[in-house]
Amino acid sequence: MISRSLLLMAVLGLAACDGPHERAGKKQDEAAATAAGMDYTGSGPAERAGEVQDKADAAAAEARDASADALKADARNLERQADVEAEKLEARADQLRDAAEKKADGLKREADQLRKTAQ
Image 1 (cartoon, rainbow, N blue to C red):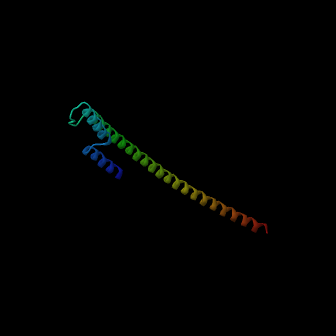
Image 2 (image 1 turned 60 degrees about the vertical axis):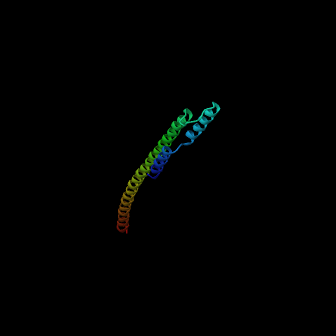
Image 3 (image 1 turned 120 degrees about the vertical axis):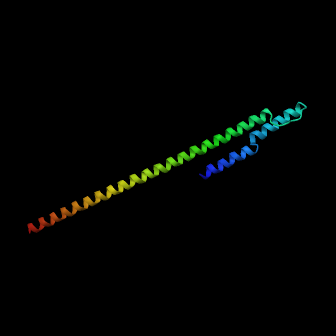
């Protein structure tokens, strides 16, 4: 959840100021305007294209974060399932040990009775 909050703040920050591609586009537009002998008034084609690229980069980062969060959730789910299965196996092992112990006790009693009758 913290990463999503940080990402939201970053996206809002990009909306509030120029991103790296938009700033680079602005410089390109300024250079083209200067070369053409014109004043740059802002919002040229390279700047707009840079803004779109910055938004696409932010969306891609958000998608990667969402995918990472989903993978982490899957991992936690698998761990929980493994824990449940391990508990079941441990309970079954305890049952088998108890049954084996009871059977061994019965066999020991039977052996003791055979010894007593043989004497």
